[in-house]
Length: 124
Length: 342
Image 1: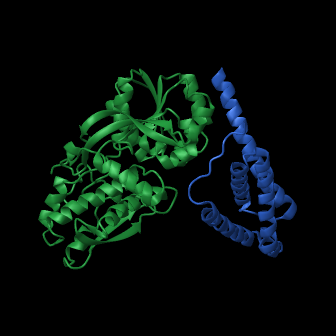
Image 2: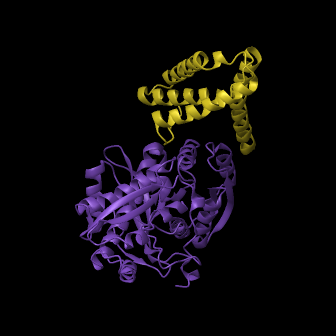
Image 3: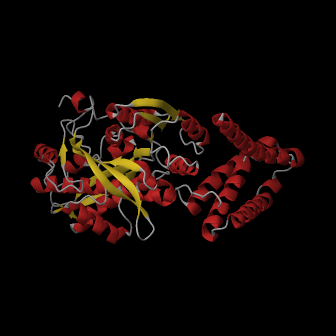
């Protein structure tokens, strides 16, 4: 019985994480008509910034706030520099450009945070 | 981890044989410097460089030049050379891939755990490692679970372990996988109830920095530890700490041992690599002071060495490190030596 309850909770947790991710993706596509393949990169930047701030300050809440701010700032910069030029163009161009952004952000996080994964403790 | 075996092939042997004694002997090193596994290659290289630096740019009195190349952690570029494919020009100073699993298998048997739950990623090395464990484990296998490579969340597996109630858990999950698994295993409250065992890879001092207190008390198998009490090792660990500022891992010890082995063989031929047969014979004799104490080459030119169980402890300064608990095998020969016709 414990196994069933535990696995239901695990499933819910994973499902909600995926739902949050995909909700953001469809929201951007539905409202702004932009296919943003780099959506996951913003998620990644938020996670890296959050983990870094939480580790430096020791406060999980500050980490969450920093994660939101970090992802938002990265999103605004990308909007101004890249996406603004793509609104009127075809979806294929958007796919190409945002795929390029994935590669760019992957390399950027490697340069800034290194190759080793960052670890976070469960908030006390 | 096959790449670790390749990493230590003195790949420059043939290239070097053309060089005159007056020129530096060129030593080629192919190792993993990029990707997440990059720190392994860094340590191997740094250990090797330390040995050269200790002899002021020479090995065995012969000037050498080290050329390092990155293999980008692509094991498909490597080749199986331990068993049937053994070759007179191929020497491995590292360890047989499943050595650390064999020693834990033996130790878990001796500790009297009657059922063990096994966990590894679903790829050839994962299966090799669990095969090594099973070769020496005499109890019952509660389950043998293969997870997705690079999985980061082990909640489902941990729930299944809790339900299966084995007497011990053995896992091979290198790199970030192991870091996540050990932390989650500890967070699930299982570390105090079902003892966890693993190979040395998930408990080196770099990994322990990320895992921290979650790994405390976990026993792991290795052919080397920084506290092995022999003169070569004491000297190596002290020198490495002084130069690089941290405690060496088994990878650094391997790089250092390889350089010391080459030093002995270079000295035997006076740096003249046209005498390649003598050079090969000198390598095979392995007359050097290894940081792991006993060291000899088997017929397949893989090491015959002792195997240890170590335990993760907390130092007074608050770091996590390994303490040698027990020597389980003395002069251990790997399982593939018999297949080699040399």
